[in-house]
Image 1 (cartoon, rainbow, N blue to C red):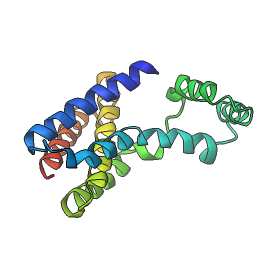
Image 2 (cartoon, rainbow, N blue to C red):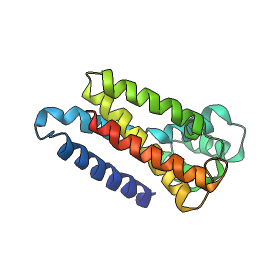
Image 3 (tube, helix red, strand yellow):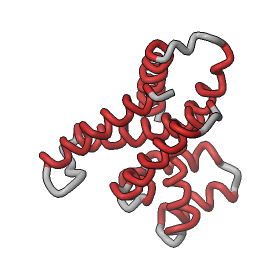
Image 4 (cartoon, rainbow, N blue to C red):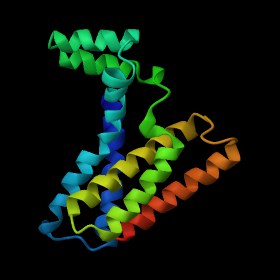
Length: 168
């Protein structure tokens, strides 16, 4: 679990360092952008929580997590959810359709919102979706119909991430 958190934080610091340099965000008044970014980076894990507690509470892993939470063993519940994350394949917030809708939402928030916190939140969440697809891409899992379309989709997603970052 620590390795995944460290990987996400490395991508976060690299991307937000790029944003800071590219957009000249050197003043301390931009701190809400970075706090929103930290919050948004781990929002993709909400999908796992919804899967366990709402969508599929009847599954064995969900019941085990629920039992641990009832006994107030939160660290063990998180460890179990992390260890069994590969079992959850039908996560709603990780589908291609949701990612496309969220890309449009990210453009809308970045281009029209005056809130630095909201901009950081959506950009970091979009970054976490890119990291999710990068993992799938490295494992040679097909995101779309075939690997060529998956490569093109991933390239456009990374390009969109950087273009949206430059719009700050």
